[in-house]
Image 1 (cartoon, rainbow, N blue to C red):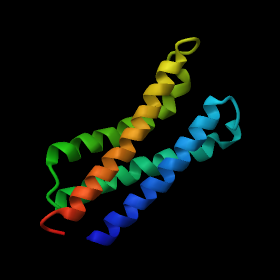
Image 2: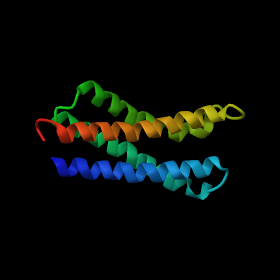
Image 3: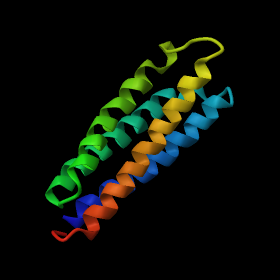
Length: 123
């Protein structure tokens, strides 16, 4: 069970850092040609988090954490997909910061779940 968890952990790490980098480029006002790639990486991070949460149940990770992670993995792409329509105008930065925090949170949840699953008594 260690190998799938480790592979998913690295997928989330790499895709997450790449998506964060692209997001920062967007904040700088350029790179919009990369938007589809950014979205694809975001979906990959969310899917990785979802799969890690599912594997976490088999490894004895705290169910509350895993349920929260599953919900988080669904919220991230939902907010990301609707981001351009939410709070348009001067207040749009609020949604941008919220989306950034959701993405960083997804990476953090993945790290926490993977770490606990790899240290679990079943592993």
